[in-house]
Amino acid sequence: MKKLSLEMPLDVAYSVINHTTIGVKSSVIALCSDIDRYFRLKLDLNVSNHINEFEYNRVKREYPYLANMSLEQFNRLLIVFKSIRDINAHLHLRKPVFIDDDIIEYLTYILQPDYALEVNNKLTVYGEAYILYFLSRKYNIFPFVTAFYKFEYFKEISKMTGKEKSDYQVNTQHVVQELCGIGKPIYPNNVDKFNYQFMNDLFKKYMTRIIYSIEKCCSKTNKSFDNTWSMSKILNNSSAFDFDEEVYNLIITLRNCWLHGFCLDEQIDFDGKSIKLDYQFIFTSFTKIKRCLMNHEEEFKLVIDELNDFAISCFNFYVLRLIEVSYKVLDSRLLSEDKIDSRVRNLNLAFERFNKAKLDYYELAGELIEPDDIVFKVGGSKFADETTRMTKCYKLNIIKFQSEDGFDIGDYHTDNKNLVLASIDIDGDFSNEINGRYLSEYSLENEKKFGNRISVYDAVL
Image (tube, rainbow, N blue to C red; front, side, top):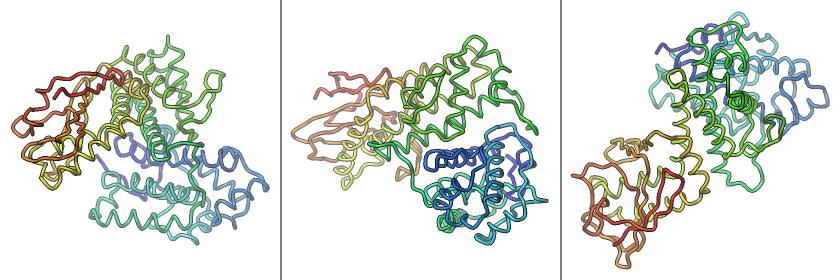
């Protein structure tokens, strides 16, 4: 895939829609939506509107390095931001974004750019990232720079070694974090911040991919244009939504949530009603969208695949660690005597993690992925032999063992009395026995279903 240059003007860089432009646009719009959200929730400001002197005082407290800008300059900076957001919010939109010399002069006095910011006052790809630095907060920077500055996207980055790229990302993070906004992440009350942040990031990531995929499938072109249709007009370009107004409205509502940075458990307006954007609403909405698109499977295969990948990623968050450690215990090439006790403990901890999710989470994720098999993939970096391992199944079985005498696993023994294993795909020649029997040879009882795609059993010893 042809790489871009960081010094290309945006209307040139976004002239063709391919993997590179989709990747760049995805990373930029993710940051734009979070900036939008922060202004809306923390500062009570709509970034689409000009702000007044009183409102600007709130901004200056949050962004001290912008405090010496005049109000008029800052409003022009917001216009640049909105242009960046809009061009990245539409897959097929390309147009120049213009920036004034006095804005460049102000910002470059604070931070010397690494590449050209503009060409004839037209913002470059690097220039859009540079502008967003100043409107971000510290917690935004590293996720953005690692998603944006990739070998496969830019010629300048592809010339670096892996260490040079990593150093550039880390150095950029450290420098920019001293200059950007000082605000902290905004969380609802009484949430597990780690789980909450993960699910938000996953939702944003897949909403980007799903919205872009819908645009691509409906437009049927890889070209980009100086003007773009609204989402409603894009959907009307396909007959898929002619008789399903609910799905049509769901797509538009979810797109607006995505674009403006709405996060889980925030109230949104849907069909004239205020509802909570929780995982139940997201799963249910995605399932309705998928069922509608399955009637036009050939046309919307790209979207359907993204919806399935989202469901698998939701499963992975709670079960992939259990699958990973199951391989490290059941595969004779990976288990050693000095590791057996810690790995059995890690299996039990992974099962505790699995149990943290509510039952309907697994039920809803399972409904979304129907009727496809689930493919659980653990990358080679997780294993000593650096070999990627995959388990493909319609239903994942998790098996609990209890023995007062502990367990003989392959050639080794552990005194741990409790053992939990996922039933995984493994070459029989390298499969460890548990107390003299292979996992498949155990009778199972006391099935507990976690939706229709995961079951937990007790092994009969």
